[in-house]
Image (tube, rainbow, N blue to C red; front, side, top):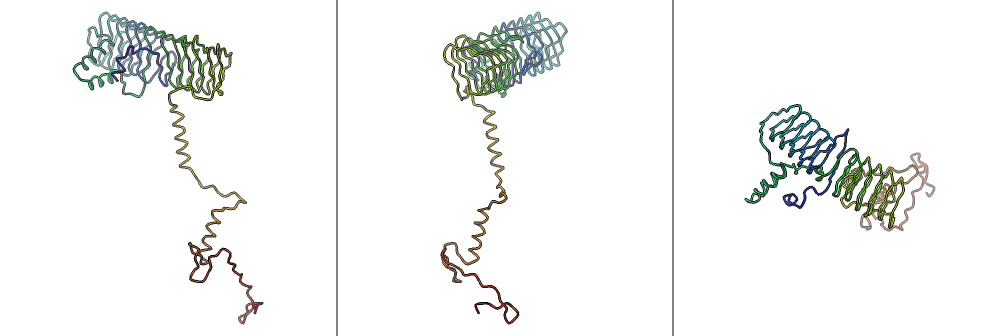
Length: 371
């Protein structure tokens, strides 16, 4: 976990995790939201923890179920609602109210137009910028050999022990209804519903997504199974790979195009090189939904394996075999084919004469013709 934190750039990719949606101009996710410095987010934001670098501008409100950390010179156009603690750097501007269920750590010259409420402590000072605080604090813990404490602190700050991956918006990005513009690669998870054109260095779209916009990249673009793109898909220098069940409501253009035989493109396909039809999945990540459905189907098939009822007019060979076996045993045939004590033979060729019809005897029965 610590190794992941101290890589060259923790905000090196636009990441849209599974299940992220844009609902009525709000960016909604179950995980955290991390925004790099000097970015613009025209949406409102709803998530677990909301962490923003310097000079980030939000065009709507912020709703954080956990903590909210806004570095200096951040600007929020509407209310800020925080379920736990809030940390506001100096010269932060909030266009609405600030409501905090926990403590507030607030810097100098913070402007909150409609006032603030807090149920915990209110400390007026200059909180250390979030990223600086994170590196200094964790670095000090590692320096004194407290690696376990450092990992626990990181888990509490970013809530990284949760299953939900955070939304990561790189430094200098612009996110709005019109477009998501970044100078880094972009990656979208599964089951997302996004508004806006995505412009990035390269783009990877997961499975079963709906994008109300187009995709454009400098390098490769990959669109996973069952996703729907309501616009054009173009790349300047890269290749385009389209998975099964994909629906593209526009033109596609790339150096080379690999199109699944079950995908649909409504517009024109342009390729400087080759256009290839294939039958494979284009994503390296395992398809968890397909695996779960396969396991469920196997379990249901194993549980419900009924013996088929005989069709009318058909002979049940298993039942006949069982009846013949019981008949042979009752006539004296043993399981090893040997002769019974009563004298019955076990040879298959032995013939038994049927008894004659009953006759009149002295007691009034029909006489036997043989006698």
